[in-house]
Length: 67
Image 1 (tube, one colour):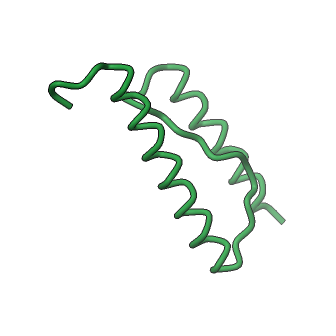
Image 2 (image 1 turned 90 degrees about the horizontal axis):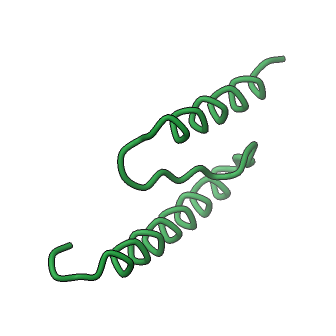
């Protein structure tokens, strides 16, 4: 985002991410799906901490699918 202050860019990305999360929540609620974990947001490239959080989320969802 040329010409913008880095903090402003981060705030804008976070605001957009919140909007996307709200849209996804609305769609999945309409489909009758239930939330099994808190949403995960990764801004920028994935770092080791983000990858670990993604792995944990995947494991939580997979565990919920077991009978």
